[in-house]
Amino acid sequence: MSIKKNVQGMIYSKHMLSSITLVSLLESTVLPIPLEALLVPLMQKRREKLWLIALMATVGCLIGAVLGYLVGYFLFDLMRDFIMQHMTTEAQFATFQQRMETDGFWFIFSTGITPIPLQIAMLAAGVTAYSIPSFLLATGMGRIIRYFGLAVLVYYFGDQTEKLIKRYKWQACWLCLPLY
Image 1: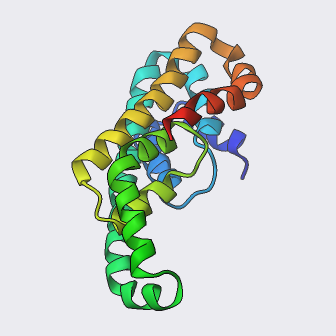
Image 2: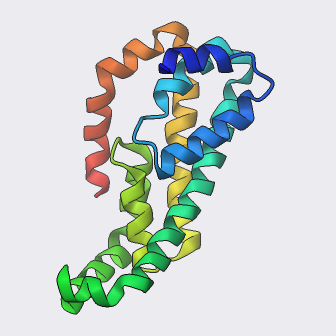
């Protein structure tokens, strides 16, 4: 089933907002598709719920982020010996942990905005036992900018939003690079 058909079926569904939350949770954890492909057309058709759609997408993402963090944390704990013997060394891992301590917030924040998969940041944060409040703050800020930014674009540019995103998405990504 195509994204267009899914959007058509969701537009006036009484489960639209809970569906957005669920799809956002899945997108932040296991689905490799950008949520924007669903959100922008939905926001364009349901402008009266524009801000609520952005909020529910953010909530779903944060729930998914916590799940991803926990997977990284517990999976690494279970597999630490194997990973240290076959994939990395204690010294390399200590360097990675130090890098997460110093730059983790900006790394996590920027993955919330850019097309870099958030799953990478979630797992890295869990593996390194990065501060959960800082992790949630960085993830929340990044996704609020991303989803409410889409809502602002739809609010001001309406049906031209998809064209703007396609035209300027890489320029926006380049603006986020200094965050690393």
